[in-house]
Image 1 (cartoon, rainbow, N blue to C red):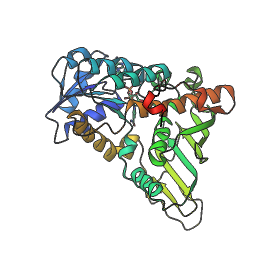
Image 2 (cartoon, rainbow, N blue to C red):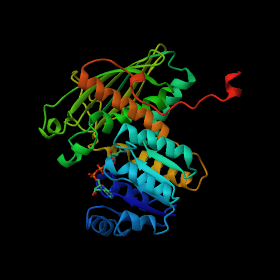
Image 3 (cartoon, rainbow, N blue to C red):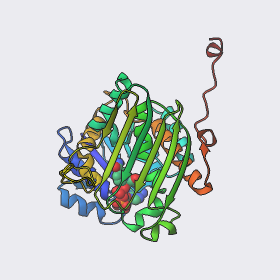
Image 4 (cartoon, rainbow, N blue to C red):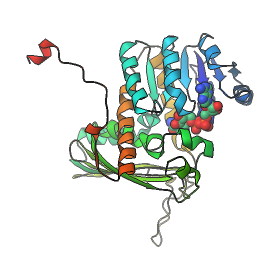
Length: 346
Ligand SMILES: NC(=O)c1ccc[n+]([C@@H]2O[C@H](COP(=O)([O-])OP(=O)(O)OC[C@H]3O[C@@H](n4cnc5c(N)ncnc54)[C@H](O)[C@@H]3O)[C@@H](O)[C@H]2O)c1
């Protein structure tokens, strides 16, 4: 397959390197809006490049990977679908809630495959947690703790267009929460603080966030995030039930040190970035995209899924701004499909 990648920043260059090494990929072609960027990264990786995303879509690619800054996701997803090219788009699916809703309508109206990049769905630990919930081995689940902590902030220019910590970072937790539990969020209360660089406050953002979510079956969820986790990159989930508790991300690389005497676990070395933490998951999701692109399997993460994670992030931002509990019913969603006369009779 010939795969085009738009955006060659942190994740775009990383995806391009991963794709280059996958068996099903014959050629990787890069494009970026910043003059010279695609050529530079293509030279480093030994792959091809073209001068623009338009040229990329015209160049006969079998799959289109969008890894640009978030505001470009929606227009490029539309361009990919208009060109009839199966499209993979990084999270969050769009920069705004309305764009995300509009993209669900696009997804419903096209048969061009679309796959959104929530790689935790391909992580072995989260899959095991999903199985533990589904099989009933945990009994009834009452509490979940989830966190996404980056070791250090991204470059300052990333923050103003990122959408804020809940849409950019915790959106991963909101998606995987639905994946693991099969439940929807009912209410949220969120807050945040900025004790690090001033560019977070200047962008209306925070560098550390916390939220309490209640799921539609009454499960309590405590969510945290920070851009300053000195101990390392730390992504975890604990699922606590009446018959057992399971933890995702608890291995020797866990980014903390025990305060107890004589405890040497976790032995390290810790991971420092999302690339190290999720390399096998990124590989698996891009391999899955090949099957999605060849229409062998349905999308493992649709725009409709991505919208629900985005709505939770939107509710957290509203809650943080207004300092109150927000019900998910306050957050716009795709219009409900009217019941047909047949549906109404049953
Ligand atoms: N799944 C994950 O774990 C993960 C991790 C990091 C980033 N991301 C997502 O990936 C996206 C990119 O993040 P990043 O950290 O690589 O950002 P980045 O700032 O390092 O790179 C973004 C790149 O996009 C390019 N770009 C911007 N607008 C463009 C356009 N219209 N056409 C072509 N190129 C364009 C920029 O020139 C830049 O090279 C973000 O949406 C982010 O949320 C996902």
